[in-house]
Structures are given as structure tokens and as C-alpha cells.
Length: 313
Image (cartoon, rainbow, N blue to C red; front, side, top):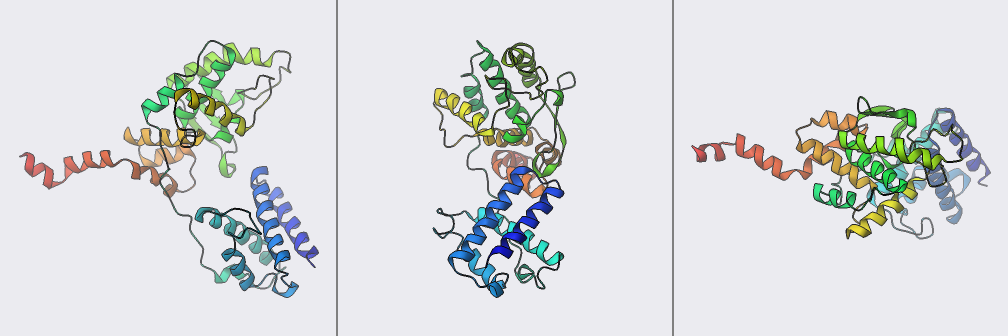
């Protein structure tokens, strides 16, 4: 009974490939739609009710069901599931596979904007960096990676995809190709990060290539001279967090992105510039960081509000 549903799902996923969606995005859509199919099978949804509004409402209400996911979902994850289903049903409607799109009757849910759970301060960042000893090739590589995280706010996946040709150490820039959302951007790099990148490229990277093909373009390499996975970066970071005596559950690669954004705003960068640097599609994603600067707000309040200025006089 669900052969048609499988057929439509495959057609939709193929359309995403044609539109040049990233492999990770297509994998995420596949996971969501397969779970929707599983829900329909478990609940024996009939063919005529497969694309009905009530089926959508029931599925959304049961997203925390152990039979479907085996784990509870956060509100943001639920919204992510729903947005992917909305895209699928729009495809069905646009291609006249269904006459009525049930999502047209549902209000679009907005993902809540939360403060980052934890943002390492400058002293904690320095404590992590101090654990990376520059006495071997791996130390040069890891120091360059962590410095780049902190200096640019680059995403973990963007970092592992960097090419040796994406680095401009003379002018202090890196180029991210097909970052999140498939967008390219140019990001400035600080002098300290540039120095450690130069040390890595000139000293450690040729050694890591060793007997491997000289055509390897990936910037950061494993001990086998190959590109590494994003998860591998986490493993390396956790080792340094443990040495520094810092909480491994609080700090991740993404924490450096939060720290970078916060330090930029503290330094009076405009929110538009930070948005461009981080590669946020919506300004609201960047505005979250303005909520973590109460001391800066206090400083402005002291300078501007009569309650302070009149008191000083």
C-alpha cells in the first residue's frame, strides 16, 4: 500500500539532488520522510488518508513517540521535522500529485531563538590553546585548527572542507565554498591564526602528506594524509578540554563560533558584519548574541540615560 509513498519520496529526493542540495541535507530529508513512512505503517494509515490534514496533525503530535524516534525531541527539532515535511508536500502539490496541501491549513511554526547554553570566555579559550604543545606535527595542525575556529567563527564542517587554495595568508582571508545553505563567503582571519596556519602549512602539512599524492588539496590532514571527518575534530578537542580541566559537555567546536561572535560584538562590530562573517541567512540568528552582553548594555545605559548622567552632574 505504501509503494506509491516510497515512489513519491524518491522523486522528491531526486529533485533535491537536481537543485544541488548538499549530501547532508538530502540525508536529513531522507531520515525525516522515512520516519513519516514508518509512522504511517505502524498506524495503518489508509491510502485515502495518507496525505490528509489529520494525518499530519497526528504525526506532529506523536513526534516524541518511542515507536517512531526512540528519543524525545526538542521544540527546535520538531520544527525542523515539520519544515521538511512541508517541503515534501509542497513538491507533491506543485507537481499535481495531490490536489490539496494539508500544510496550507497549518500555521508555519518558527524555530525559537535561544541563547547558546555556554560561551567560553577569553581565559578559557587561552587555557585550551595552552594544552596544544607545538613540539610535533600534530600540535602545529591542532593549534592552527583551534585558532581558526576562534578567529573566524567557522563551522566544523566548513573547516574540514577547506582547501589549501582557500587560504590567503598575505591578506588574511579564508574562503568558504558551499557553506551552510550552499553559500560561499569570505572571512577575515586574525594575525595570530594566520601565524599558526603558516607554521602548519610550511612545517606539518608536507610531513602529513608524506608518501601520499601531492595533489591532495584538503587543508587539514589526518596522520594518514587524508581528509578527516567533523566527528574526528570533536575527538581532538575533547582531549585538550580534558587536559585543561574544562567541562567537555559544555564546550564543543561550535562554542568557538559563539565566542567569536560575542568578542566581535564586544569590540563594537555591527550586527550586520557579524551576520556576514558567520554566514547567517537571517539577522535574527545573529541577534541572539546581543542578549549575552548585559555589561555592555549597562555601559551604554550609564552613558545615555538621565538617571546616570544627572546623578554624575
